[in-house]
Image 1 (cartoon, rainbow, N blue to C red):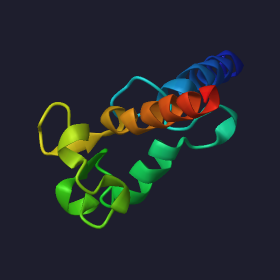
Image 2: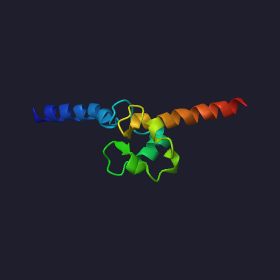
Image 3: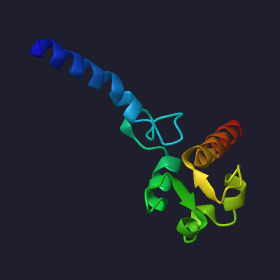
Image 4: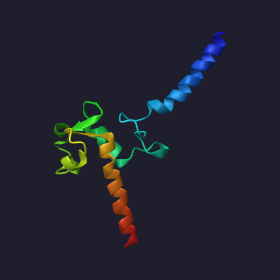
Amino acid sequence: MKRNTLIAMAIAGLLAAPLAARSADGDRPKTAPAGRASPSAALFERLDKNQDGFVTRDEARDATELQGRFAELDKDNDGKISRGEMRALDSERSAAGSSKARK
């Protein structure tokens, strides 16, 4: 009986692991495929000093990457940038890269 319980717990742990890796806003893992953090995820981790899942204006004060862009990235105007809102930077970078490739 104990063996079956251990097997069930191991399977439950394996199934729960991908859920634990998801970001706080619940839509995608924090890291890009192959274990590398996306540029926005790395920036987010660096700026989120208190690890609450958001970057506040105070936390972003010295971030040259966000100078003058905080309000633009804060789509829901709650005074903080979530992981999902920060991902807009990745979209912009990929769009800029594809337009350079066409030239």
